[in-house]
Amino acid sequence: MMYKMEDFYMPNDMLVKLYNLKMDPELLDRLAKEGVSIHRALSPDRREILHQIENAFLENWGDSESRQRWLSECEVAFSHTPVTCYIASRGSEILGFACYNTTAKDYFGPTGVLKKERGKGIGKALLLSCLNSLREEGYAYAIIGAAAPTAVGFYQKNVGAEMIENSAPGVYRNML
Image (cartoon, rainbow, N blue to C red; front, side, top):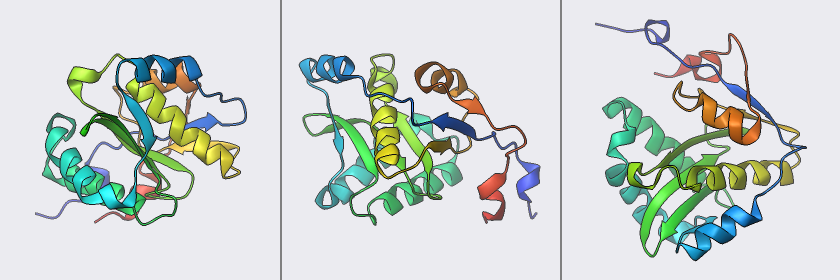
């Protein structure tokens, strides 16, 4: 049976004003004291990062198709210079990741934080790192692509994101 994009629920995009955005140095300092490093991924670590994302973030994937799409987007982040993926790590363990400019320019996502590490500010630090990079590239606004319904409140609270009504499927309309 053939399915069309309209057959599936697609979340709306969200819009973030970048010109009012500030990094949170206190958050980064607190995370560092807890042994968590937030940094831009390096190309030589590509295979290890993708491997850990694929295997450690199984609970984030709704299904095999979503898993492959997120991994495809993460791979694109490594084709940019500088790499458009930030990771949160403790030693060599990846606790979270966030990408930008992968599906389209000025888009944030995909992103994920291990369930056991949620609620500690890691997701916020990754989000702010990506959005500040977009601001440094000259963008005034950023788009959070297809924001998961469970994440909408997080984006509203942490960066003042607003829903873009009737934006689904948007840029994703031509996916296979």
